[in-house]
Length: 261
Image: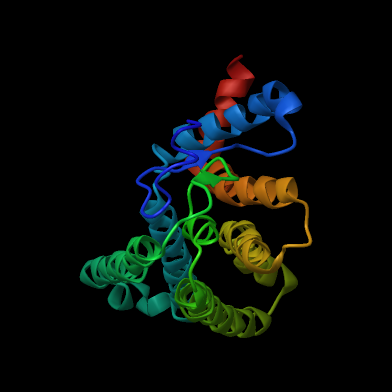
């Protein structure tokens, strides 16, 4: 490790993850909650791939899925009688394909941009996982292209999804407020509860983590790293809980299991 950290900085093929700098003495205690969160995330979502490319790709895919779910909620609430006619199986398949292709295409430049920069300082990344901006910050040359492209993806790709979701919910709220009774309004709004929770736990930490990694030089390093871990692990850990509690069959099965025990 010492040899790879001091030689051949021109085009290194590997990088060394240092974990959380400054908190080495607490690694044993920190490993317990982080290991538990990681295990829950894997069990709840089958697999999480931590490769530079797939972190960004799956983030964009999740954003696109949340936008598609906003469309689903809009049609279900604002056009309930035409739901089956509008959201047909071929249309849903096209939306899923478009989300995957868009995410793959916008993520594809990341490894090529990171590869073009000269690296002459170190190959050690101050984080437990590898993301594009962390690699770019180790480069010696002018890396404005990578930074600008990352901001473009943040504001023009994820930002457009947020705008689409906001417009959808404006229409949903208009339809809800037209309902005649308070009970009907609450019941209809409750159907969007899981989606709204998923939006909050995904977009807010994602935006804060992205902005802190670029402009948060005044924050302690371990704060940036810990927040990045929270942003990466918290949504996949909570998503199965959020949607599981809202699903009647799963909720009933859990209640019967608890009552039986």
